[in-house]
Length: 238
Image (cartoon, rainbow, N blue to C red):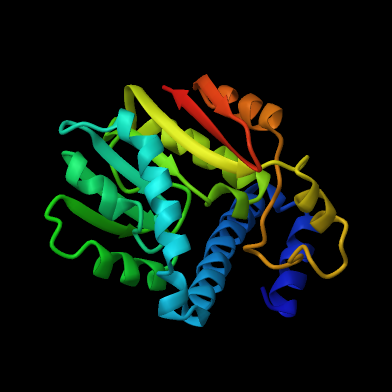
């Protein structure tokens, strides 16, 4: 927001015009948040070397993620990988699903995902530009957020939980992971002057399982299980 525009808005607020102006300001701030997030992740993907991002370690992590998801997949499953990145998990899950959608805020990530899922007829990719997903309620049976929510602030995570609840069918499952603040290397990075990435918009935010369970329950889910670890995994049902 430009300084002159900010001063004009401040004057209107002081004059009592805030009732109509504040919702517009909040909407503008939400749009800016997503624009900056998209720019940050586009820049990150542009900086990655192809051999590095498609390294054996990267592929092994995707295989491990699929192994954990496999019991939840079937030929009738409608699957959404929210924050799909380069599509490394999506391409592995798609052959086991009726439908496999990927969504991401980064156009560069989706370009890689499109290449990685080429030839899979049941895959659709879409760009995320806000909190609302452009799909009808009850569209999916399984939603995955892997290595994604940790890059959002608390309030956007709460919005995401509510939107995932909307797009899941009854009894649909939501699987997500978050880095545990109590893991010593993460805890040390938070108090480090140069190791935590702050104030970068896509820096990791650390959680505790108790906080994640409380928030996802408030969004209407029932928590089935929490798998502990440096990145703890939460499985919840709508």
